[in-house]
Length: 298
Image (cartoon, rainbow, N blue to C red):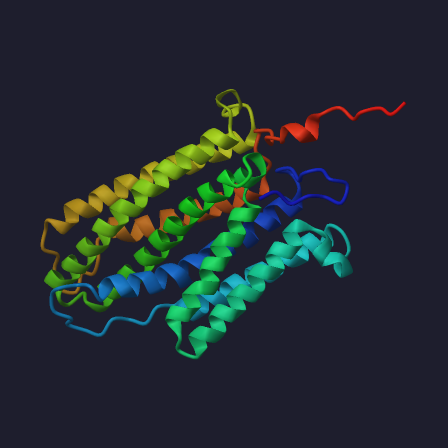
């Protein structure tokens, strides 16, 4: 997901455009996670087999969609600023950002009309657009997009689902047994999502970063930071599992480790946003036809 200059060069870590793009993409990922993952979390919570001591909170899907729309508009302006404002459609980044802006607005409109099931479709369209823009697609066409789909979708659901379950757990904090049951239900689903994330993340890293470039490039070091944050998240999730075996005090709410886990996931999204603004060290795989020497006519 590299923003290109008009001359065709990629932005570097020292460029203000890189950091501006990273923040905008962080907000886009956050909006997508809150919207799509929030609706998934609400659906998961409804599968709880115990008592519902308090109404489930509504998901923040509309707010997430509006946040995603704002972030997409910002990315479109960044892309337009690198060329000319009137030539937004002349860049791939600008076209995709504009398309995502429309999809987020469509999702927000459907949510405003109380059509959450239909609103899922444009949000999935955002995931599809991200697959086209992503770094793996530029290195390994088609297969790279599939890797991104299989990585971004569970990531968005995992992050947004945790935010929703935390809100529901706080609403049920005066009913510890039901609160623990709800968190345990989330933990089971999160385990499967995390397994998919690890597999697709490893594949994506192998595609984008040759081992010799892992410690010698900015992209490699930022990727290492992301891996460390993921490891911290795993530790916090394990601490949350220990908490599930105990009976918390009435009104205590979810475990502190689970709350911190939510913060580390936000940090992971921020680092991911930075990675999308950097150029990976891997070189694109070009079709054989494109590297053939031109035939001279006599």
